[in-house]
Amino acid sequence: MRMYETIFITDPDLQDEVRNTLFDRFKGILEQEGGILANFDDWGNKKLAYEIAKKPRGHYVCMTYGGTGTLVTELERNFRLDDKILKYMTILLEKDIDPEALKLQIDAEAAAKSEADAAKAEADAARVEAEAKKAETDETDETVDAETPENEEEN
Image 1 (spheres, rainbow, N blue to C red):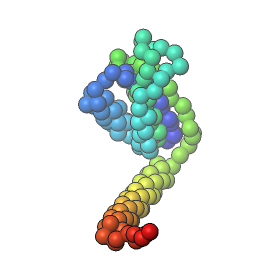
Image 2 (cartoon, helix red, strand yellow):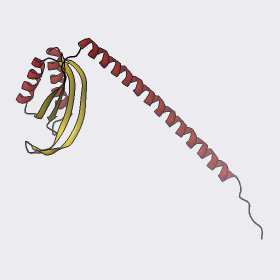
Image 3 (cartoon, rainbow, N blue to C red):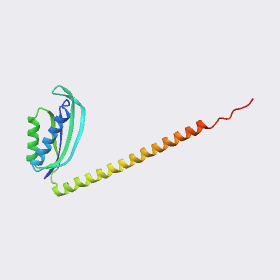
Image 4 (cartoon, rainbow, N blue to C red):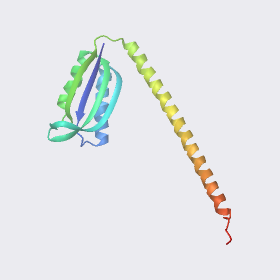
């Protein structure tokens, strides 16, 4: 099994539902051909270096996966046949990978990401709570200041 990275550019005017259906189709092809999806990164709409099909922008997607040459051939055949795909490019990252090691690596990265997300959510909650306490104490201080009579100077 080999490790590949495919970057493809879709029509930026596609609706999200159509785009997601397209992505699901490519993921399905990957699974049908026995590939292992390591990373699916949606980069979003970006300006193209030059116009492609009279479009100055494109929606970029990067897929990293393990598979065979037939998988790449099938994916690229589908890219060529679909008018929604403006450009694509596949590169070989590693010639020989262990599928089990790849699955373990993907699981470890997913676990690390979920832990990081949980830690971030906890930190955000603590920050919001601290801001709420600070706002509450500021309101209390303002109320006390308003109730305290100011010293009047007698002439």
